[in-house]
Image (tube, rainbow, N blue to C red; front, side, top):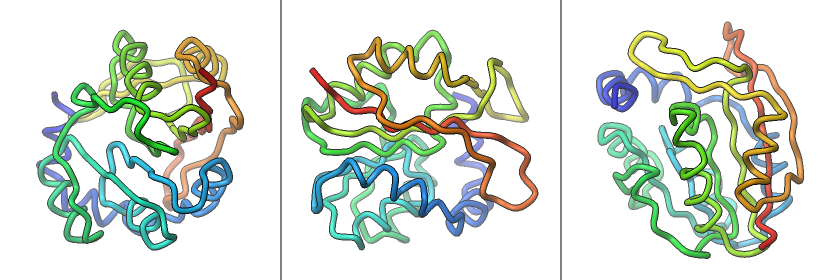
Length: 193
């Protein structure tokens, strides 16, 4: 996949660009739906910024990334045993109280979103919460060496409901990194079945 190759080739630059991004408010909105000390999956953990924050806050954390180079950097940064795997490799059943997928599902092709959302739902315990964010829009596009699947709020909500989830929180934010004009759709959805 071209996006994985991009992160392998640009791991240091991507790590440095994202590790200090302040997403505290996003994590707080997610953690409001996760029991203290619960088990959180950081799916597509990138630099490990959020996995580290969750572990420091007393949560049990499992983290993975599809980029072998990002896995190395995240493991060194977090001290966690970060796994090298893809969304397609997810085979957990009712394992997690929460799943964090910050700016990671944006690379999943639109025609694979249904099966990917189903794997995430299956991995959640009943009552578990899933945070996800993607770029705001309606396009499928290639930028440089990466593919992007943009969603608007209505499509995000429908896809989550189709996957057996209830949308507890949905909002749009600007990019927290300086000089970035991207807007993001953020969602916390809860498994109800």
